[in-house]
View 1 (tube, rainbow, N blue to C red):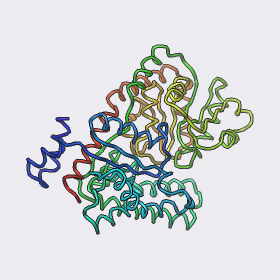
View 2: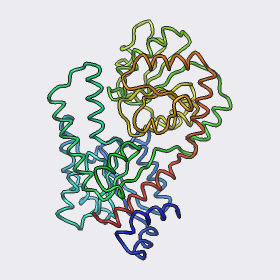
View 3: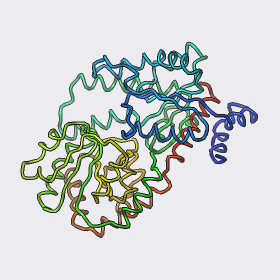
View 4: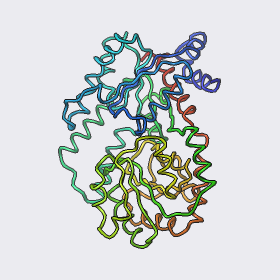
Length: 405
């Protein structure tokens, strides 16, 4: 707590006198967190919200949540992200009538604009903190660059929608009193385009249960050629590169097998993308239902692969490292912040199918290398706890309460 208070004081001394700062850092906060994701403790973004929220609640803060079902259900998917931001002020007002006033509203980056414009008109509304798991401007640029390099068409409608969403997110961030991001590239961009004093870098975290399960898994570790992908089965996660790379590995190594978990689509939709001769060694799990299932899943594999075009900082990468899997990821964003090539994992450039194939084959063919990288990855993740992540988020909330932008 003392380190967090010192960091806050260092950022905010130009805004309020010392007595006000002391009152702020020692008070408990009422926080409302809003994101258009399913209410699921085994999801990605929702897990970050819940686990850091649990830590904050243990410290005496009140943390409430609004997820997709409470936002709106009868809006077509292609306009949802443009429509929901304008509903947020009403949702905040309703929640405050039901549960009392909040000190700060945390909003996922694409949802922030409607609320910050409402607060510009009514300063009695609580200050807003934007949280971004990958700045939309950078995500759009990465997606377009990837498709150009792959010589894939980019529809005019897609271009316009992506630009509009990035503009909406950018304006929302600009109106928030503080911003939470998850990697150094986002931090640098946000610092260049706004007030660097209001940008806080947090991280995904690991539960004590995961850390202990990882130690136990390492103690009874046996060599295997299992490759695990954990994430939604979409282009941004690199599935166009993953399928040919994994296929080549399975052709060359009869002992290798592949699992795509948490993919969010029916298993046959994933499995049939591989040639029939390989499908017997492919497993697809659309959903993960519990932390126990997730831990058991990691324990059955030796290699974690995530060839995403763009990420904030994937929680799955840290969990895989904690469980003693050797990571193979793309050289982007929060993955580059964690993975040091040839030290605690392997990095390839986005879209490099040959490089991805070669690195997966290296690990499948060399259990000693896999073990060395996995051990270093496991050592690297030990301090990345949810308590540490929550402390950073609390710093952003306190900045917002001080600045009242």
